[in-house]
Length: 306
Length: 274
Image (spheres, rainbow over the protein chains, first blue to last red):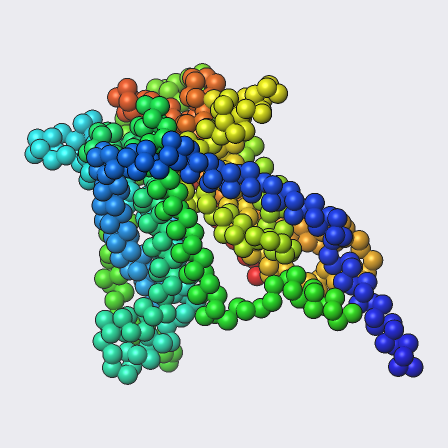
């Protein structure tokens, strides 16, 4: 009998929708706890930075930022990122090309070694350069004889930053390039393109979002690194202070408004990083066509249906 | 006669050559300095350096607070991931993107802000201190800072697994008479577990080495709120390079062991849920 069949089916589907989600009360409680946790740990600190920075008004805020030592710190941070990010970008592309497009022994060991700087404490990342370039270090005496300053100077800061941000671009690009395979490049080569043309016209358009993603993360870390840079910098105001180090100095001098003013710039950088990251993630998702409906929307479809 | 499939793509030599050169120059040679420097110490010198009471106290705090923070992150991270994937509510997308804030925010800013919030006059501290809960300049503060910096790890490892879960398995469990809690503990949880463990290990590893966010909030009192990375810096400032390096080696071995565990976990979960 068709009628009873339909009824039966309705009952089953009602049961089903009820039992694969939680009751409204449980759902609200869970959402409440999650939002509470995120607000306490993320939103409140975010707001606090700007509130503390603007405590004494916008004029004090602007004066704190236009202070010469602060400008010098901003300049050094930009310079450091401008050297570290392109170098690690070139490395990332080279490493991903070798690892993703070719077969060789020890590949997984190489990938592990590339990830190594992530496993090392920032303080140790600074320490290793002290051990090499410091006065008691391997090259220290030789450098001193030749009047070359690396440690407690800009080159040391740049080196430590390169070390800390080393894996970012490579580890984003390797999976992207691996998933692309090498058929397209092979086709281009067979059709007579040069190696450079193949890379520029075939590979690069395929990896551009992954590349950008890696660069965004690399840049955020390069500008924000504290521990490693703190060890090698020497903390000379106006000379070897990056923005995060300058924040610390201002804070230790009880100049809280100025400390939070510089911190607010770094917070804006972080927020821009998140926005850019979201944008790129949106791009890659659209491209790979993963536009499947999120779980809850499927559910409501079913609810309508029953 | 077997034809070996030849790779016609160019540039392997130069790409690989540059990769190894740069890796060696920036990472391997500098890191090996730790081992060379420690090798100048005798075993007994090394052992005395890394086991003085002050150093031992710093291990206890660093490991203890990192472990506690990782547990908090597992609990709340799983909850946050679940809520973000399964439910729809206002500001969900903004909160979802904000989860990555601890990755993007310089640690010094995080530490300074948390200290200001939890100090006696701060937004949180002013309500907590009358209750006798001291967060800033106490071990609890170290834990809070480490929770903050480890927050994204568990969420971001569990989230994709939750998104990929096959709803039909839950339906099957439900139709076989399991209630929601049974479905979660017996069907869903085992599938999330490897990711949860990986997230835990990542958050723990990150917390062990963390420096920037902690030194502001901890107060850095020897024996009480001094973390191991700070001790390395203190030794460096006293020009005790070998002492600093010995402690660094201990930490390095701990992080490498964790890295190994993480890789094995990922290998295990890939194998299990490929």
